[in-house]
Image 1 (cartoon, rainbow, N blue to C red):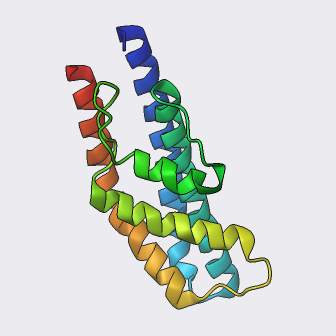
Image 2 (image 1 turned 135 degrees about the vertical axis):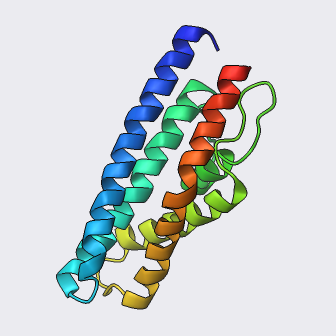
Length: 154
């Protein structure tokens, strides 16, 4: 990757991190309303948005490097898994395994949230997803920083 392409990639990643952080801020604001049905639904929506924002980050990276996932029925899980592997000669991994696991919890929740039109959100299950998001907020920036550092060294 030449310097111009690296600069573009870094700028796109930084912009997407700003979006992710804005969603984390909304989650932090809304978690106090978890005992209210509307607050619970709003929090669920933001947790859904959080995974979508991360998936957009993954797409930015995939676009700059490998950019193909063959099995569309497994697209979301394969994209997430791909971000945790080192593709020799192409790019280092973006995510540590632990970070990928927190994200997988969010991915699974987003799938249910998008496709379950007639079910009520379970507060206990939502709290598990909220905990995953809080753990994720503690570790993902280190993963991104390490990824960018390794790219710049190569």
